[in-house]
Amino acid sequence: MKATAAWERFWFAPQATSTLALVRIATGLVCLGWALSLMPDLFAFFSEEGVVPKPPEGQGPGVWGLLNLFPSDAALVAVYVTLIVGSVALTLGLFSRLAALVVFICLLAFARRNIWVLNSGDGLVRLLPLFLVFAPSGAALSLDRLRRAKDAFWEFPARAPWALRLIQIQLSVLYVSTVWQKVRGVSWNDGTAVSYANRLEDLERFPMPALFTDNVTAAGLLTFGTLAVELSLGILIWNRALRPYVIGVGVALHLGIEYSIRVGFFSAAIFACYLAFIPPETASKAILAVRDRLRSSPLSRARKGRDPVAEPVAMEGPGPAAARRERPV
Image 1 (cartoon, rainbow, N blue to C red):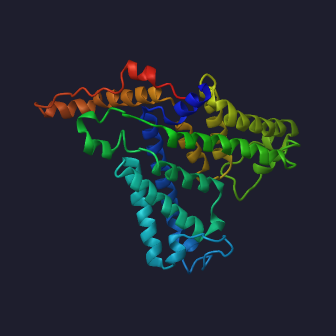
Image 2 (image 1 turned 180 degrees about the horizontal axis):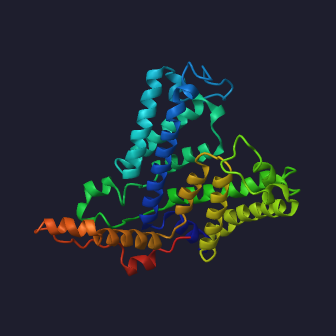
């Protein structure tokens, strides 16, 4: 019975939607950045006159994509513009679930049209809006919320977190499976993997010091340290006490990767997943603190000074009692 109650609490016990709102905004911004990064090479990568004139064969039965079904330049532009509009709508929380579905379908269209220019990080970017299709992602901090309950915009109604849990599990499985795949090879076991990665000139962003590429001891420490960090992120991130430290080390790891290697939007998608582990009470306090700071800014005070009838409206988030009830994993 205790196991059943814990299972139901994990998936379905209502909690404040402040964390989900942060994940939605971050996902929308990542998808928007991904779309804008395609602009210089859009036709070169995805049109009939580009490097791959036709969709690759052998993608398996039932595989489809809008750009496979409609391979014209007009369709390419339409899907691209729709992706940008959908990403903006998802960020702002306008028709949030529909926007998430639109973004997912557009991302899938690009992935199926040319599989050779994308990597596993692009796959994670594509999964995030799919999870948000099933989440009440417009319940808080959104234009949807503003339209439905303007006076309660800064509140975070409680909802079942099962879709948010899927994002958390996805991140955990990603790290554990990554470590498993790495240790089955050679370079990650002999301590040379990071040295090799930092010497890939076609992927290099900024050069790493020779200490980390040519010194056997330093390269080994970085290699085995990376494995340790990734395994910790896959397992220890579920421990509430250790979570801030584990995520902090994870952020440092991915910033290091971003410094040295061009990995597209992989790290940005990972950071969006990290947000899913912020406890709702912490997210609520952070959002309300930003609100209060904005209200006390010189620009806000000047605007109120020009409007003699304007008065501040108190719109509080979940109180202490609600925060005590919301103790997610």
